[in-house]
Amino acid sequence: MDKVRIFALGGLDEDGKNMYVVEVNEAIFIIEAGLKYPDTDQLGVEFIIPDFTYLIENKDRIQGIFITHAHDDVVAALPYLLKQINIPVYTGPLTANIIHETLKKEGVKNAKIHRMKRVSKQVIGGVKVRTFPMTHAFPDNFGLAIQTDQGYIVYTGEFIVDYDMLQEEFLCDLNELSDIGKKGVLCLLCESQYADKSGHTAPKHRVTSLIEPIFEESRGRILISSYSQSLFRIIEIIELAKKFNRKIFFHDKDMRDMLKILEEMKYYRVPKEMQVTEKNFDDEMEDIVILLTGSGKNLFRTMSNIANHEDKFVSFRTSDTIIVASPIVSGTENDANVMENEIYKEGGKIFTLDGKTVLSMHPSSEDLKMMLYLFRPKYYIPVKGEYRHLYVNANLATKMGYGPDKILILDNGQVAQFENKVLTSVGERLELEDTLIDGKENWDVTGVVLKDREVLSTDGVMVVGVGVSFKTKEVINGPDVQTRGLIYLKDAEYIIKEVGNIMERCIEAAVKEKRYDNLQVRAEARDKISKYLMKETGKRPMVLPVILEINI
Image (cartoon, rainbow, N blue to C red; front, side, top):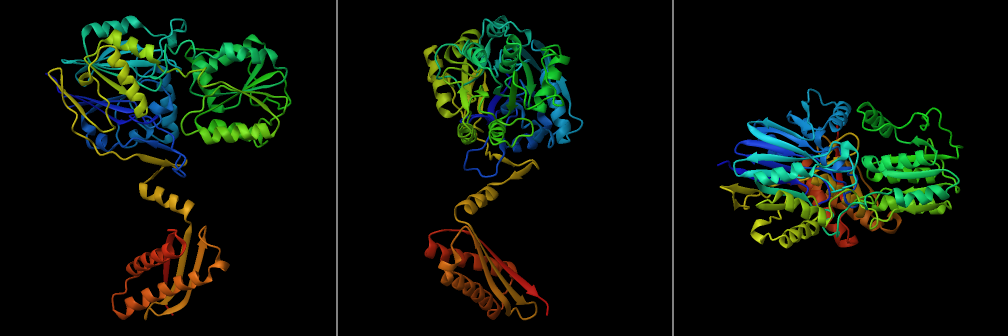
């Protein structure tokens, strides 16, 4: 029988950074390649992506990567992976167009992108792979079933069950799911983020009924925010603007480009007479909806800029009605709070959709139970979410009659191995380290760099400079001591003087003992100065000794 291994390189016990690996004998299939936003103490880090080391080391075995939709938590790390290994990408038509544009911006060439139908059957790397449509906030979303002779490995992707969904590109086909379940499922991977919420997510994902009264009462401009990737919600907002005969201005160029793609693919069209172009927009317009879109922190920063009159298009007026239709997600809390403060300072009023009332399009408990009922897997692996979410998801399975030996809560890098339709091991673990991406230049940030930033932010820096003779190594200039963020120099002259003395003594001792080496002396001085500063100030600043050898 086929040997099957399943593990995650990201997405377990965390929000985002999703990447899952299914191995069937020697063939490797990757599912998703997402990012996550950093915690507030990860200074200067823009986002975090998975560790690709295992994939790079085994690149010849990889048959392809499947991207179920175009949200950042499942696709944004893809360019970084494709820069290192050229592997086939399988995805839906809309997501394929977006990936193509992203790769072009990132300078990734010769990528092989295969457009898949939402319902398809094909053989990839000698293995049968089946896709099935699922309802999510992004069109063309699908789940994945990889066939083995032990049974299907099923990954649902992100989804909800919505019986009132009419748009073809968002539809789910429960018959497809049931058919896969009848053929036999070895293992089901289901997301966990909303596992603690009762009932079905639908219809609580819809916002029309909540914001329509605000549209009715508003007499001035309406500024409304939504994450750019929540296309289902954006379409709801556009339809409301249409209903109230308001023109609409799309603040973000990327959103304007996205809507062009939707129109070209005949998924959705915004009437031309409704749209106000960038060229024709005037900040003095009144009867207009201004749609503010973006991702993560950037969306709330845009709203703060508007409140502070620092935006190139829109300046906030107290007559504006502001609707926050974008839920505050992990990593954006501080920026959202700053945004609200700035608007309130300007005398504005905000209508914020309550995260308990309005849900994102992720499965609640009854949605998850339906997947278990339709697929009837032998084993269940909760994925996508913090540990508490995985735990609650696992408990749902126990209520459906699954024993603890059939439910796997894994860590990132922990490998579940199956042979003869039985779980044989979860003992193997891959050593993983997050890749931290710093700013727009896409530099990797190692743990050492991050630690340096933490030190600089809490304990400051001290630079100790000395000039010595190139020939004799005698001190001829300095020492000069400069600090930032450590102590107030006038109150600590004795510390500055002693630090200079330590530096001189280190140089003199090394010369006297005939062991002088510029790097070694600097390291010795750094160690002694750090210990002295810790004793005197209780802080461990970054100490940077500098020895300039001057040829005179």
